Structures are given as C-alpha cells and as structure tokens.
Image (cartoon, rainbow over all chains, first blue to last red):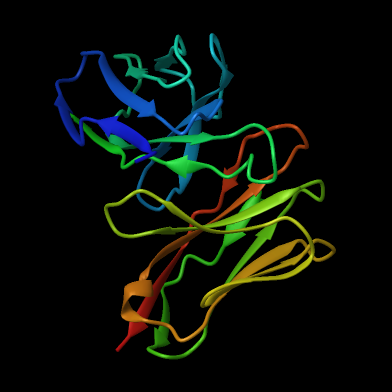
Length: 115
Length: 112
C-alpha cells in the first residue's frame, strides 16, 4: 500500500530536549512538507522540500530543523529553541508534475507534548 | 486580512440536507483549490480539488469555483452523520510554487 507514515503517534518530552519526528513516504513524491496544527489555528507550514538535499523555510521555521537525504524521508527535529513545541505535527507529500501535482496527502500525524 | 478565510462554524445541518461550506481567498493569482476533511484527532484527508471556474462533482460532493469573486465552495448532498468533521480549504497561490495556504476550517455537524 502506498502512503505516508509518521512515527511515533504520541511523543512526550521534557523541556530543553531536542526531539526528531519521522516521516516516510512510498508514493514516489518529490515534494514533502511539515505542518504544525494548534487548536483553532489551522495548519501552519514549518519547512518544505521539493527535491532531495534541498529544503526551504515555511512560515514558522524558527526552532525547527529538517534534512532531506533521501526522497522517501523528511525528518523534522524540534529543538529546545522552539518556545511552544506542544502541537500536532503533520507531514505531507505531493508530486511535482501532472494535473495532480499540487495535491498534498497527509500522514497520520505525531502529537508532541513537552512538559 | 487573512489569505484564506472560512467561517469557523459550527455549522449544523439536518441529516439528508445539503451542507454548504464557503471559502474566500485574497490572492487573485491563485491557481489551485482544495478541500480537506479532518475528523477530530485525525489528519486531513483530501476530498476535492478544483482548478478552473465552474462546478466539479464527485459523488455527493460538489466543488464550485468563482475566480472573479475569489471564492470556492463545497456542497455536500444527502448529508450523513459520518460527514461531521472539520473541512479545510487550501489554496495554491503562486504559479510554480507548491506551497498551500490553509484556512482555519469550518466545523460541520450533521444532526440525525
């Protein structure tokens, strides 16, 4: 089955610790994205990558870092510099050619709680 | 002004009726428009995409796009309790840019 997987589903960390969220896709999509969702605020873009070894900051990149060493994988690290890291994190991917190239498909998400 | 605006709701519709969800956007250069359904605690699921003016139908769902008025809507016919969810509107603004801008969503409740 083609799809996007995120792990873990729930993650608990102490304040001051870095944490890495996993995102893997087998849809052969070139582009991958990380969003953060807080109650009542919709989805906000953290980082995105349109090709391997390249990525761009989104609207709220401060306190986050990413890498894109493989087409299938786009891990997100939430660093201790992120002031309010508790949120629902969503990974998405999309193709880059054809009529459906801008349709983004989401993974199941990781709910991060930092105390 | 927000780039993509939706009425947050909640919108309550009787079972079997038509639910109408609206979305307006600010960038006249917007190219692609999407509707996602998100159940509570779950991730968004793409249900409709529309790229040109007019209507696009898929089963009980119809997306309507009016670029001159800068709005896109989603109609759900014969609403079912399973349609109760938050519906997110997303817009791709810049040609060649794959970023989507999301509205904050409209919470829809179908009343049995």
